[in-house]
Length: 134
Image (cartoon, rainbow, N blue to C red; front, top):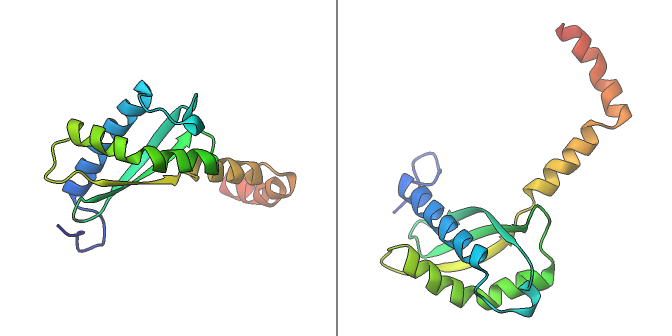
């Protein structure tokens, strides 16, 4: 299985990654795993990216819009064998994929950009352009 000519993931990679995202989200909703660093944390899976051979999945996670702490990320790594088994039961694949977790920083970055865009000096710089557009 390969990426398309443009380097984008194939339709199969996208479909399987989305199925894995749903399966992981369901496990996190049930909170069946027992790890002290994950106790009471509501993990959100924002995206899953599949390797071309579908044997590795990278899940981008956050805690209800906040970044997970390093301890919580370590907790996810500790429970990944359990999560892998749960995903294998939920999604029919030839191989159960190895799960890798990365913090999803997109929301924090978007908030930062929004704050920058609302600064008075930025608004001042944008004001003449708005007048020109009208």
